[in-house]
Image (cartoon, rainbow, N blue to C red):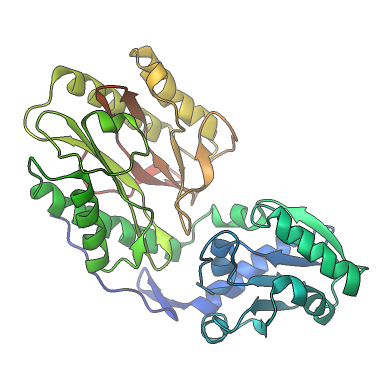
Length: 387
């Protein structure tokens, strides 16, 4: 059995390899790295809107309730950093982001933007295009034209996300704790797995177990699928009862101190049929081959191709449609991406899933997912749970 402590790390202090490090020290280090990246940009002020990026750079952990709502934004210049938010989060902002000036807006971000930029003496504002909706962009433009017509807007992409790809020791520790909690919960559920329990009941047991063992939340709604439902890679749990001899897919993750985990296992109650044995072995071999190939300098596209070509050579090429893996950190899906598109070279400190799958309509499927960290000698698997 996997033993795991349920305690949650202090917001002000992180223990890494026996050493204490404060979040303030981490924030200063990250801001310095960001400012180094911003030196070559055409803008003088950078607005950070993405929730994970806000947290990464400031420690401010408030989430956005939905896409058209925001808990605030960071404004970073060469010498100043400001966190703008509303009254709901002002106390939290002062507590979690002590190195930032706090600006409370009362009528909304767009209305207050000209005043914020005047305070910072900003003339050229870079913004995260992935998070700013067109409607919000129009509102920003409207208020700037009226009150700060000299300010220009510049869309950006991936500036903070590229920094987040390389995990620091304290981040890896948080991810390992998240993985351990997930695996501990799965072992309990697997040992109690029986015929007749529904997918929904299993998903709830998984979510409940994660929270009881210290997770602040699930990383995403757990996926539990059985029989032909496993042919849907992102199946939504139903009232269908699991049966013997059929594939049962679990895909779940936890969030611990902001950091996510993501893993999948496919199991069978009773005796698996010959199709399951064949498909399972192909998926397992493809995963092993891909993990063995991961090393610094290796292309993400090339790693994906190793697993994809092997699955195709075994006759299942038409049944593996998604990418081989994705980065995991403050977000469940982030850079890098092991897939046929968006290639980049792997670097030491990157964390990614490796999750080949085969999905056969009318029968079901198999997906196996582990998380690995890229080290100088290759990939180190973070999972302890057997396949």
